[in-house]
Image (cartoon, rainbow, N blue to C red; front, side):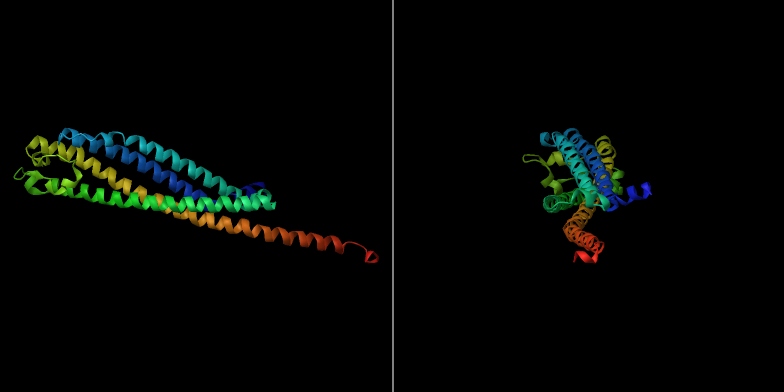
Length: 247
């Protein structure tokens, strides 16, 4: 019986959302870290272009991982507090119920804003992945593989900093093409594809969090009615046990 009671207090929906969030954020930060490293080395070694902001972008991934991990733990705790018999004990008083509803509402707003941010991240990653897929297809084309044609990246001029010469965007020679395609484009493409999938998984987890928080908000709100019904039932049972002469 004790095990069954413990199982009934686990917020399975919030737990699944937390696992999805942790996995998505971990894969996103890891793959983006590696992808940014490949991209920085590619610009520096192949195109002779320095991108200092890309080198400092690594710190942002650690901040994202810590922030999303902390948010996931907090939302999991909120889910535990609003599930089963725990909800009846924690949100027994009206002040606790009001505080619980306010916290759920605030976390819903926060999760909604975060979902919009991650949708924007997903859109940017989709464009970046498309660019790397195009680069991979250029490397895999027969004229480039047989060294009959150079890799001309002037069509991707918007990715280069201002002042970059057109000669720097053209890659010729077996060693340069092999280094560009094998050492940078192929592994970076895999990293950004995985990062895009991970960002989509984080969006799904945030949608799950929104559903769980709205459900917890309704449960905490309805818990007041259930408490009033229990009090009325207790009062009715107490009065029914009194002798009729008392009336």
